[in-house]
Image (tube, rainbow, N blue to C red):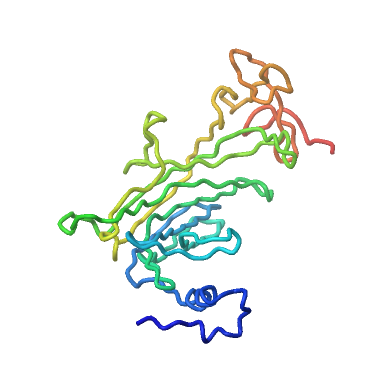
Length: 285
């Protein structure tokens, strides 16, 4: 028999209603299951890592909760995040990720774990970027998969690269900025040869095979930097030069056979080639 909590909530304004008062009381009772898997993440120097575990109602449960902002009932969702801040040296960190979450009579199960990698490429406050770097897709098991051989440790690899471009934002107009992009590799840290074969690090596994295993994901930084958009820079022995495009005001600056180049700013200098920037001196502000 379910006992109503409303009599104990009589001090709440009548406008809130019995069901709303009951919801407030019940929603304060929540916990994660003891069943879990361990996520171990390794990132290079000046990189951080965030994992986000997403939980959804188990099949057959509605798990609705009233939203005052939307003025109606919505399906519950839950997210559990863990962040490792960037340091000057490479680092490895682990976190236990529960397989279930329970609140107010609602049972939720892990649906996916997303990876987010952040990195710094300079000393400025804006000299950083992040990438949604894949994750683990957790599928609900519909058959008994206990006979399926699952290793106690699953290894995943991601190679990250900095992609060059000249900023069009007001804060860094005309300056070099870099975008972070990470992709899965094989055991030898080699990327797929074609772009349509590339994917983010991660994989898929049944929920009932996750308990007590370890998932290791390691990210490394590539030594090679490339333009964020092809045919906008040309590579020379000394580095990359950005194409002028149709004119200095061309917002895209595609090369298209045009061998005229434009300058850019980097670390207070006007440059013609990246990363050397050896042609001109310090800018007079």
